[in-house]
Length: 177
Image (cartoon, rainbow, N blue to C red):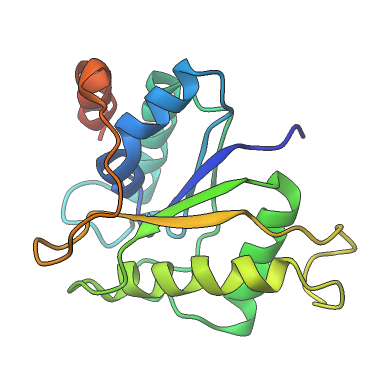
């Protein structure tokens, strides 16, 4: 597979659309390859089933023009920084070779969001280690940077991406869910 430029990692289906959907659209308009990785299938959500969420995610991926969308499936409500979850995420990094990772901010109420933020950052380092045993012989690779979305109001962002031109399309992707 051709490498991905921008990879948001959300705990649940719709998290990346909410936090980075506009940024993905802007990046795609500039010619960058974009993707989304969900850490769970969202099976504990109040509305809908995991199967319905998979359809919603595929529909949203089409609206966003993603090159790839995948799920690690660590279990909704059970995302943890474990050896198994690290191996799975390192494998994704080495397969997709994303330059930029976008993920949750690490200080918020939802434990899956917190764990996803820590996993995303920890695995950036691990994926670059030649002797890290997790990735089925895939060549080591380390993404260039990690940025966070959905910052709490007490945290000032270090940069802001103007996505006003893509608002309606982002909204269409959100309405898929």
